[in-house]
Image (tube, rainbow, N blue to C red; front, side):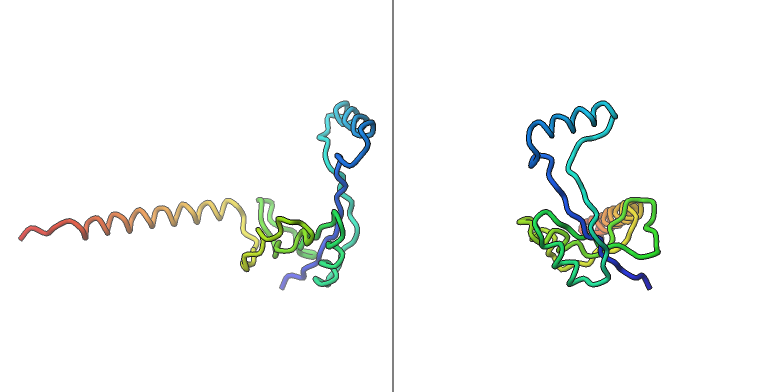
Length: 136
């Protein structure tokens, strides 16, 4: 059984900084060859989902559900329930679909999708054969 923890962080938008600070940060990033974007601060990790939602409900804060002592696969995966990752976001309704997300490598999802497409094509061929008139 996988133990789930909740990573709590907050994001400070670069656009909220004064113009001169944005300019300095942009120059420093350009010189270093880095990408310039929002600041992400790690705040805490908790085992309690209700506490995680409470903390993530602050302005600019978020929570990420993750496994404890179990690394995720190296492929891109989705883990856990993202329905309340950004509780204060006006777009949070997008995540409220009632489906639980599970860990599944993207390569496996694509293979399953190809299998479904092949099965659909096979069903269509059978359906076409059934529709053709039988000559007696």
